[in-house]
Image (cartoon, rainbow, N blue to C red; front, side, top):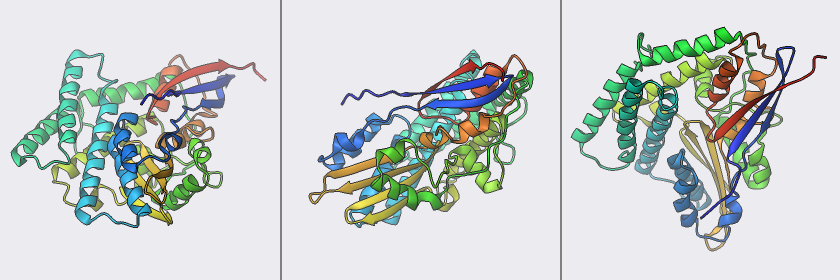
Length: 368
């Protein structure tokens, strides 16, 4: 299957008198999966998801499986639910690790080699997360991951960044980019997407469809979702800059590894709302999965023969890069007072971790 769609987000900042006066976001275009798979067996859509979504493929599959069960009036047994939570959490750990390590450590050869070795071990762990692998092999992989995490600077959740390590240097660089640029961000209003919003979201996906999925709102709200949203909700914090967001990501990586290392014994310890499903009426179902970049939603309707009648999905990126969403709120009104502004702002935009690439541009406006 070949799909042609715009797989990039363009972020253009309007600047006047060294202030960001406007943020224009040109979103990506989403593949019309509902139209492409209408009338086809649901299993065909399920099999296609890993090819369509190279990032968070397990989360998409679990979301669709959960939505299908809700549409069929079924409920996954506890062991199946546990395995799905395990797959989703291990994938979240792997995705956050990739985002944390690939680009920042590419320039230093020794750090890049260490990061590559660590990511290979994480990939091995992810590949076998749903299989009955030998305990000895799993323990060896976890031991290697833990050792390399410490060398890179990932400690326990209480001290997520160890001093005098590559990650500590990365944190220092992030602080320097902000300080040297003289950039001062404007904290956005505290508005977090949560599991309490799920029922409204899946109902809107079913009733409104792609128009809602492309520019989602909840009574005018465009809340934030993702690593910082999870961290801020737990600790009752306001929005923050790139340094705080990077720290939150490292903290979550440490927390997820601790859960994985403990043997995934308690689902609630991983995430109370990791997976949720919702019955939406006859042959209709919805689901939500908490993945690396935030809360992912699926909604599906089956025809009388069990084939796909309608299907919609809503990824976290559409919330964070909404035209009036968290990225826009975090940048609008920010003061640019130095030469390192582009790097500082690029770090800020990147901290929202979109699931596609983005391009940042500046547009100088005439002073009023």
